[in-house]
Each structure stands twice: as structure tokens, then as C-alpha cells.
Image (cartoon, rainbow, N blue to C red; front, side, top):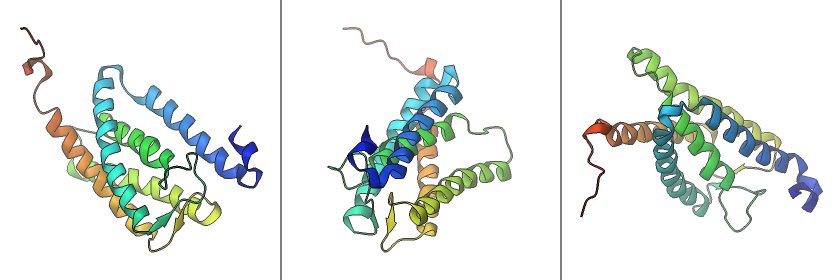
Length: 171
């Protein structure tokens, strides 16, 4: 097992593996069957966002990830490429379309708040993340904006009714 490689970081490896399991279960159980394709698009788009931004903050030495599952990458592969995109997929497919603007704002506010609270815990109590020239507020703002950008892309991508899109390629 992973934590047998380095017993000092058993807690960190347990959190990382648990994050994969929990995010997978949430994604599989909370994505409506008729929105699986929507979930995939939101997931993949958010991976692009987090890949670009995650790489930037690590290369600029704003954040450091001392304990990671995959040591070849300086970023947190677990968070940047799976957990955060999975949460973005759920954010988009379960978005309260018919709610008033205040409820929609609270929905936007809820996701980055929960993730930021977990990140602050991880920064203070584990070796999963280390703020160098960063703080929780930057994390909150960047997550809030990434959910917003992801949502705008999602709305744009699915703006045409699927029946209007010609997918039959006849030669």
C-alpha cells in the first residue's frame, strides 16, 4: 500500500486515497443518469482550468505540495485533476436553474467555502499543502471564479438543444 512506503505520512496518504474514493462515490451517486454527458464535459473543462492554474501557482512557488500520490508532478494530482473537477461536475449538473438570484449566489458561495475549509485544515494539520505566498482567501477567490467560469462554459456548451445538433456524419 501507499502508506507502507512512507509510514510518517500515513495520515496524508489516507486522506488522499479517501478523497479519490469519496469523490468517485459522490460523482457516481449524485449525477443524474440523464446528465452523465453533462457531468463529463464539466469535469473535463474543469481539469483544463485546474491544470493551467495549478501548474502556475506551483511553478511560481506560491503553494507547495510536500506529500503527493504521484511524485513526478509538483501539483496535487488528487485535488487538481480529480477531486476539484469532480466537484465542479456535480456543481454544474445539480445547479438550481429555477432558483432566484440569491439562492444561486449562495450555491456559488457554498462550494468554494466547503473546499476552502478542507484546504485550511489540510494546510494547518497535514503535509498535503503548504502556503508559501498564498492564503485561504486566494484559494476561495480562485475556486469561486473557477466555478463561475466552468458554469459559463457549461451553459455555452449546452446552449443548443441536443436535438438541434447534427451528429450524424454521413459521407
